[in-house]
Length: 170
Image: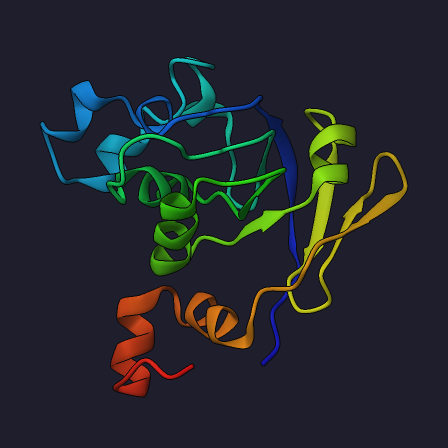
């Protein structure tokens, strides 16, 4: 399998970014339209985030990213915005799996979380497990995702993977 590198500008957030910050609850029950919901992504932390984020950009955060509710709206709105990946020191497990299931790469790297600054340009090689910070001229390793998760990401999410494969095989 061959992934093209994910390359984008960093949007930096702290620890414990919960799913109600990623997509506020006051919106997620009004519509299922992801494009409309994505206009409100991260607005409690940065009211203009959805207008500033560009396809391929990377969210870098601290510990416990995606804690809170288990709804898959949170990773889906980030994917709808075109976020290329989320890099964090750690993730809430349900967010991690929901992100993979919707085709949004999520990577754990303590060094990248601590050293990366907003506006840096990152280039991520999912297969090699390397994040290159083009601004700081640094590289950070992360444990590569298992091949089945890479297959799911490459397919565009679990539903598309199941359509192609017909089954979920470890």
